[in-house]
Length: 503
Ligand code: HEM
Image (cartoon, rainbow, N blue to C red; front, top):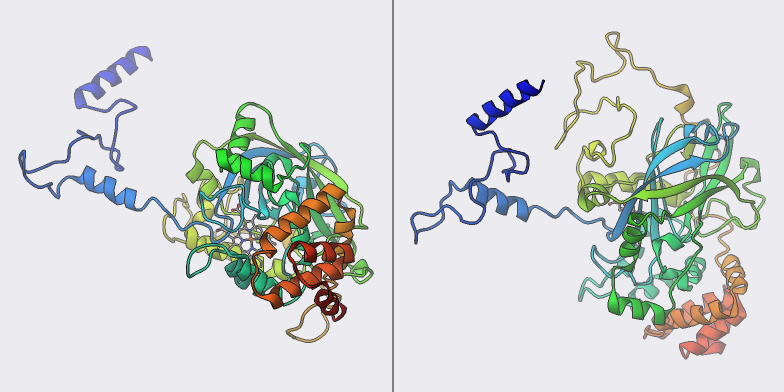
């Protein structure tokens, strides 16, 4: 063996085979000179034959891909999820089949509105996206650090994001624009009361909870359905920054969230989150004062049951190849977990894969970070950058040559329907009760900071009708809340009360 490798090395050297570590072009051929272009003599022009120079410039010019249209700035980590309960009575999802069952995960935390490399100290919801590489394919639970959302219908998402993104005229974010959008009805009141709490600027990604926000459906072997919400609870606790603390952090480090995650995990201080579920039966859907499938609502009276723990334990080797190319999609579901009828979620089921086909290409699910651990037998074919290793002649179904069976437990659950095709808002919108309850549950300091944080943005709004409409929503949620924020932004309380009385 020893002699043989010496002989191989000797042949290699004599043939000029490069050693590991040799600088190469993309075709693997060695580079002869990485300092000087090939020129026509000492003073002549550069030659077109300089493939290395041309390739370097071409590849450099193509290094950027479109950034995510939202959630552009983020950071990811690998880890594992260990189930703590056997949920097979509720779902055929195999990751919950036995206590102790371990499933690898990749998690990406993110800010929402501003671009890649924007400061991480800005007020924003934070993304909390988890890809579970299960033995039934990938399940993506694409959530946020706040338990509710601004809107309840996907048709408003592009409008809302446009209002929150920097202005198309001067490229600066402007509270006049987003409050102009939010002031037309009170749908966002609960979310804004969450977001303007100090947790709207997390101290670290480790110190925030995560929420699936929507209800999904658990389906068991008998085809029984339970609506389920997924809530991550941080074992590190939850900590946000006040405006003063955030300003101080930003003056020294606008990457505090990314830096903290790399530092902690690389030092072996591994963050953990417990996963809790809340479940209700379809028969219970109409028994609440709110609509449980409305993404602006939490389920305050439904108990949380712990179902597992996630530990993040390894940072990516390469940011772009893993974190930037990670594609989380609410449509990546596994048998036993289905979308609920929540119309915000229904829009998301379409939107993510669609944007990823554009952002990353037709074969993005073949990239190592997105590839399922199980074999993919989808019969999908070709497309740009296809790195599959498909050997079969049968790329269709059914086939006698190579039968591929569908799994009946993965079939969509049978659901009764009635009513009409329509375009109407949901019943029981109740935009204010949960916002008021949240305000009243805050401590004195939390209330003080909420008012200050909110006034910092609402106080910039110059249009009186916009400002007073927003104030009336906070007043409707809670009179003390509305009165205090009215005073803080120098609004007219009589006008606020009059508007609130009409809601
Ligand atoms: C109809 C409403 C929504 C639409 C249309 C929508 C659309 C999008 C799109 C297009 C992306 C970029 C995906 C990519 O390029 O890979 C994205 C990212 C994201 N969205 Fe949404 N979104 C919606 C609501 C929500 C809600 C309610 C949540 C939280 C529960 C959420 C959480 C996230 C997260 C965490 C990411 C980043 C995923 C990652 O880290 O790559 N979105 N969203």
